[in-house]
Length: 368
Ligand SMILES: Cc1cc2nc3c(=O)[nH]c(=O)nc-3n(C[C@H](O)[C@H](O)[C@H](O)COP(=O)(O)O)c2cc1C
Image 1 (spheres, rainbow, N blue to C red):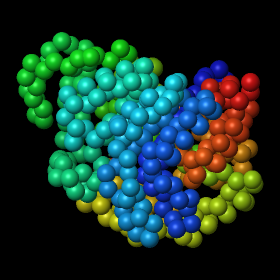
Image 2: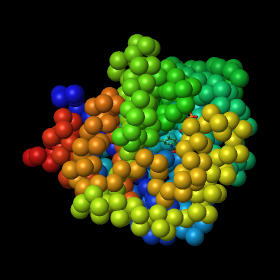
Image 3: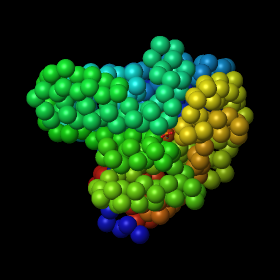
Image 4: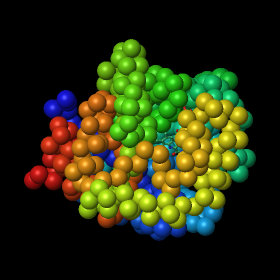
């Protein structure tokens, strides 16, 4: 047990319409800045450590127009940085479409807007249609995408620390590039690459790894594996963050009924489209996200694989068990409704995790 360890808590912001329930029976989340701001202010009030937005450019259609609306990640987080005062604001970039010098300056600017609360989630390559619709998908295999990622982050780090950078690499060229201001504080950098290559890139170049989690053996093994790789690389401070989908109910049975209801209206067309898009990646077999979404289509689930249903007590116990056994340093939360359900998570489930040996800033605030 990890009695004294303080775990970070984040919310995975619903910057897309529908959030993470692809169903005609799901909550009708608008995917607007107003809504995301409401969610972030709520998370901040409850003591969450960070709000993270995904980067998504194209939706999947179907009966629910699933994700046909999506806010751009970094500009959303710049707005939220101004709207908030203590919560971490973490945005996502696709490294193959944003030149590193552009992001280096955007993040340095956001460091000022947020007063040091900005964080960056890196994506090496994910869905060929998402970026291909803009003519920006680079048809690289999995290994080459991580070669690009290695070069990208090294250039960004140089621009944040050196007066002038000249660089001639396989993917990027800089000629006496000056990038000021510098961030006052180096932002936390995370990556959700969940393949072995992705983990290695993340451990070598980032502060934390972010991967989907449930309370099954696979998730526990994944958590331990990250810690093992980090220890081997001599990075004891490296953080592992599990992404949980939580569906709370008054009782276990009611929570399960909620999921069954979502599944009864599952948007098969949107899921099939998503799986088709990911399967066109020539490295789909190595692309963890591709396997994840192809699997979601095969099992026809309206929510991400490994979603946990249950009463407050059940969810507190199951998530706390995963944190202690999987050696997690943080969790990121997805819920069906990001106001009503997030309140249950922040006001009841997370505070109750303290009974199971997991402490957070959220539980400390709730006990006051
Ligand atoms: C928890 C999680 C969050 C992710 N967020 C994004 C995202 O915001 N945008 C995106 O295009 N891909 C996203 N991905 C995809 C991955 O970052 C990564 O590109 C993909 O998994 C391929 O790399 P890998 O094979 O090393 O996992 C996410 C994946 C996971 C597991």
